[in-house]
Image 1 (tube, rainbow, N blue to C red):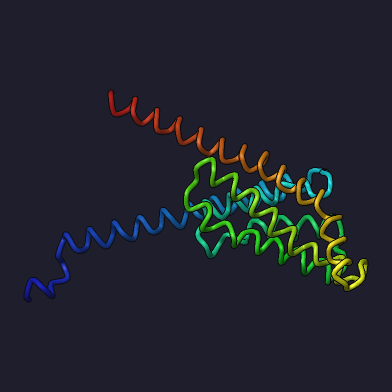
Image 2 (cartoon, helix red, strand yellow; image 1 turned 90 degrees about the horizontal axis):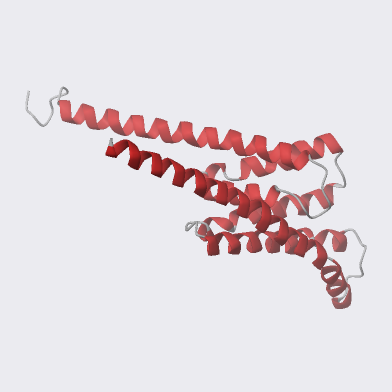
Length: 199
């Protein structure tokens, strides 16, 4: 049997096994982060809060930063859907725009949070709140609360500005705190690693 076709090459087997192990570790880590974010989102969103001031934006930011693209929507939709199930569903049209706003709010964050420094986290907090505001605020127009005129659209979005500002503030506070905790944990682990290597 030629070396090129031999099945017992120890280097090939070792390399394949190592790659498989790394993939399994990454998958397990992603599922653990997914479960943690989903649980955190549900619990914190259940806590009574003023309209527009919730932790969903912060969960969106964490999901976009630390989950693979295919899983990023799960913790956000889990938090919103389960809390709506507990508190009661509302009009289908209103829900459609609210959920679409949350989905778009997650999708816009991926490129921004490819870098996780303080400036990008702040930009992500603003972008998430702004996208959600622009989409979810279509609801009052679609439900006929404002006339379908330019003045009606302007009034609708002007009246929604306080909710935009609350959303930005909530994202900055909750999201900033969450990323700060993640950074602090990383620093502590790095410090412990340095101490271990010295000994």
